[in-house]
Length: 136
Image (cartoon, rainbow, N blue to C red; front, side, top):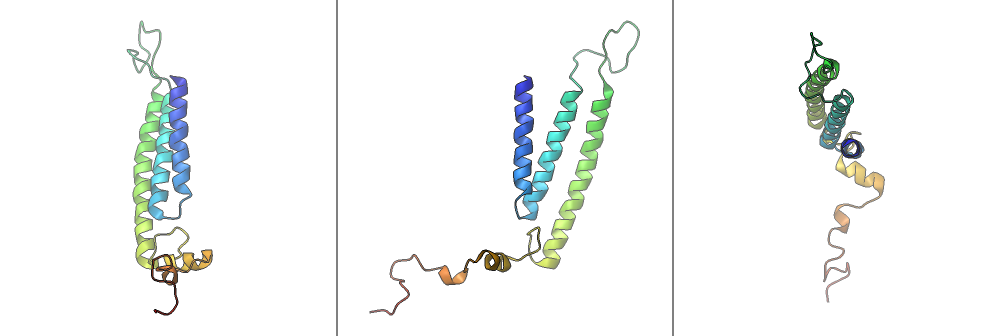
């Protein structure tokens, strides 16, 4: 069971990092959310799941569930929700003011120019009958 949980946390973290490395704001927000979920599950798993154990040590109880990981995860969920809302607002404002949702602030035309790709001039290059020469 531990291997399955560790593998699941690893995959969610890897997907979050992959989305963080994308150039669009929405993918970055999703990546941050996935990494937050992975950290929450990790913290919750480190606190161990107890079944039938009281949350507070009382009389006659030999084991008790540790409430600290549950409190940390609950706090992290609330903070993560607020942070996600703030980052979405920043992304929307950047899109409105900059005209692009790229995280580096470049437009699509500037990105194509930086990569050396001709946008509209290559549109019909592979179509039959469009060899660029004169019609016969």
